[in-house]
Length: 225
Picture 1 (cartoon, rainbow, N blue to C red):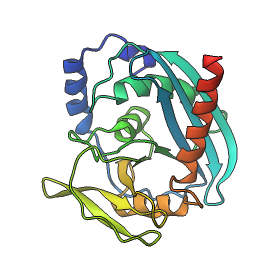
Picture 2 (picture 1 turned 45 degrees about the vertical axis):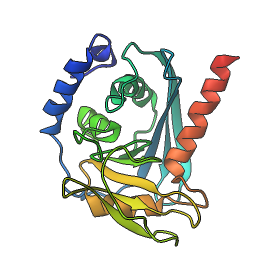
Picture 3 (picture 1 turned 30 degrees about the horizontal axis):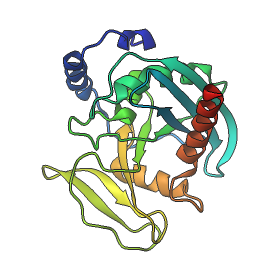
Picture 4 (picture 1 turned 45 degrees about the horizontal axis):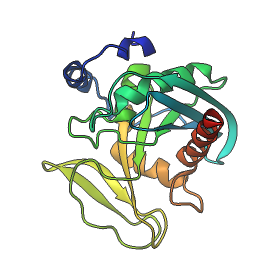
């Protein structure tokens, strides 16, 4: 069982080796059980500091009404390295998850699922560690190529890496940059897109991760006072 403390003394090379090990456990079989509660998770930190703020918000699905939330502040030792950000983020998210009074059926994380050079973005990493259905919804591309989707709400195009579809580029609002949706674990590619579109309100960012972002930023402001 991987605990938050497990990450404390990992080296970057050990982290890459763990990603390759976890990759063998990825399951992208579509979720067959109903989603009653959906979670959104986000992290806030300064890349040059060791303090990490993590938050999870749980909403009724598909109504998008908040039911519960939890946030934690942690100190992390792992350095800020592109492609290995999960090793800064997962320990704090594990603590936020344990603090939740209501666990969601599926968790959307502000980051990538399999749309990652080693297929182990934060959503996939966390999903495997907790054996939980997860989806990644990121604001920027980490890897892959795509054609720009149309400018209408919910226009989308596939995101490819080495001729494999690793995600979907989704326009959630006209005249706004798209988001990058990818399955994390225990959920399918098309299903991930369908669920994220159900979570979109009037903002560019889907409600679960938008609300989680607001939560962690509030905690970060408190922490700096």
